[in-house]
Image (spheres, rainbow, N blue to C red):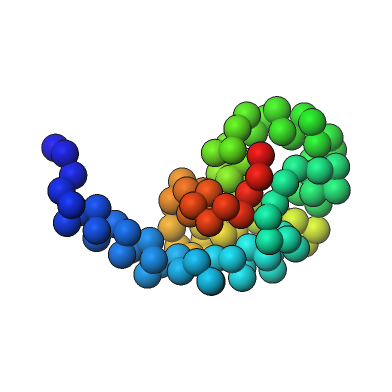
Length: 105
């Protein structure tokens, strides 16, 4: 069935409540040491990827990269992934990272 305006509003409220922009940006910067992530040889290495180009190709597109980062639990050191930290699905966190423009592909 098509979603009502009320359902869409409830979804937006849940996003803002569970993943407020300020909190997501703060945790993202803590984990990935940047305000806007992009694939470089240094960031690939910090993710335990040996080659930036191969990693970019494996991600495929922006959503692939944001999914990877949403589920990621290591960047120079281990941590609880963004999706676990905010208790949301990997897909939901990936979408939020894109909405907040925290990742450049």
